[in-house]
Every structure is written in structure tokens, then in C-alpha cells.
Image (cartoon, rainbow, N blue to C red; front, side):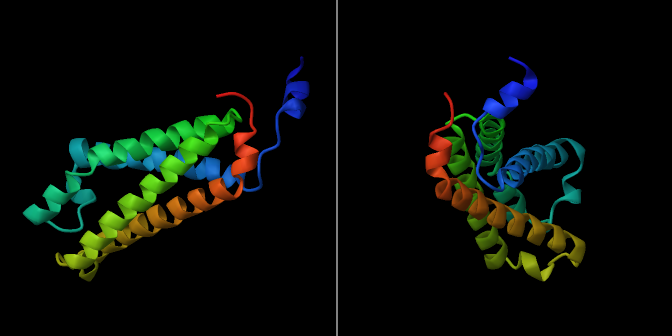
Length: 158
């Protein structure tokens, strides 16, 4: 079978699949990049506070963020390959993103991070963009996945 014939035989994906695929890839790349910078480059680039409690809080995230990164990558692979497991991995990635956003936003609100305690408004903007992106993308991926669950579950194989 030629590549063109295989492409035409592939099951149709729901609308906005490309946006979801891109979002999953971005989530994976940004999460990995964040922790590489945090642990191996200079955490001051990312830190929006310099208190001991802030560093303890941030250092509690790598395992949960690894779960987010892994599920986002598996969701992207499954979606790209048109696999039924797209349903599982996208719901896992989206819900992990929502949970992490909730944890981060609540910490930032309770600890005045959005008030720029170090005077670094650039850091606050970065933090707010991370929080908003994590919340929006997580909600969108869960909504999109659930809305198209029947189509995704009917995709070929696992």
C-alpha cells in the first residue's frame, strides 16, 4: 500500500486534533525544559520568590511533573498514531495539568507570589503565564478528549 493510500485509509481524527497534539508536545517540552533549567542551569531564571518555603514547594513537583510529561508524550504519540489509547493518555495528561495548576495557583495566592515579593514583575508574568497555560491547556485537553471520546475509543489498536 502506498503512503497516500495509507493516509486515506487512516481513521479521521476529531476537529482541533492538531491543536491538542501541539499542546501535548509543548507541555512535554516545556516541562522537561523547566526542570533542566531549575536543576542544571540557574533556578533564579524561573524562581518568582527566594524563600526557603518557595524552594521546598517547587522541589516537591518533579515527580508529579514527570507524570504530566510522560502522559503528555504518550498522548501525543497515541494521537499521532491514531491509537485508541489517545483517550486514556489525553485524559491523564489533561487532569494532571489541572491538578498541578490548582496546586501552583493556590500556593502563589496564599504566599503573595503574584504581588512580586522580590520586585521581579517579569518573574510574576512568567509564573502567571505558566499557571494560566497549565490551567487552560489542561481544561481544553480534558474537554476535547471527553467530547470526542467515542471517536477516539474507536481508533485502531492500542
